[in-house]
Length: 538
Image (tube, rainbow, N blue to C red):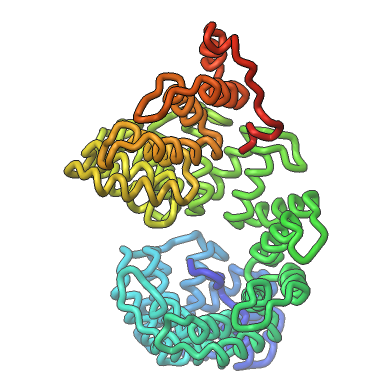
């Protein structure tokens, strides 16, 4: 029911109950239940705990039920868990909830915690975060470490409840004092976050180191990240790798699995040769290990290996399958990659509506490439109803993140009046930004503006400058336009067939087959046109 915490009769509860009395003797279960005097709740619970640990769940249920009927809060708590897990009784969430409620009302901190979880996750009752919060609060005030931890998470950021960094720190600290190591790590995060009102990076680093000493995989991984990036500590790739390796060997208590984020981070380092010898095979092996553990970024990376055939046989179907796994866990890169699979029919049946769906999910999380595609979809009505205003909105989001193509398309929207009143000056401004960021299409558009005098004074030489910029980026339309302007003597340029032929030849070598037909004209056949070696590479 709750992250990092298993919903079962945990060892702390059983240990506390067993401490109440000595070991139960053979045949004593029935005698304790049938005692004509009022049964001793503590002895019944202790005996039930021992029976439960032996796997004698039905005996444990009998003992706990007898004690529960006589009002014992611990018995009600444990019996509720048996109903939850279906151990010794049939699973019954209604009975579970009722018993948690009774035990919680008696002040049992564990029951208050589990009742809060019932309300939070809608088990045995309707979801009600307000009720959940109230019971977490009561449980935490009764010194339940898990409730203190959960309150820390809630105060750190919850969509339905107010954030309080100071209260998050308070509850994490209390939970950490009681041995919840992940609470200690999160306490470090609160202090290390520069945006937090509680920021104290020196203290945060010390807490990370303390949590790492207590085998917190998350804290060990965090230290690796800090040393890899040189954030607050001196950049030290060897230390980063050592921490990542240590984290991969650290097993999570609840899952008994290696720490997947560290495996993925190591994989990235091997792929890029960052601090280690570049080793694609090792990178892919680590991606697969982390992907098998369900870590979304690793699933996306492993999917990409299948897409491009990196150390595995190229397989579009497998690529899409891994992208889908990560995408369903809200990995925005995987959502974008899966959208492209649907857009191009790679590994899946082409489906523009599904492509738009996954692009939109990725775009909403901030992927600038997905935002660009959403903008395009709205512009032309691809997988969604055509909508100029929505198109411009998403293109602007992408452009504001530095996407050069989106900048060019925003310029196009202003130039054509798509989703906004036509504004040629604004269009020119966006084209300039895009072209200076290395976008060939924007350079082409700027060349056209100067060639035709759209929004700027007509100037053939300026047009050629912008077309040449686009040509250097491989745009054959720019090459052909330069050639045409010299061929015809357009936009104030002096007619020059030699220069025209040279640019047509460049366009042909860059893949523009139509240029071959032009070069076969008599006026060009007479010319001896050569393109210097490397010229087509620009």
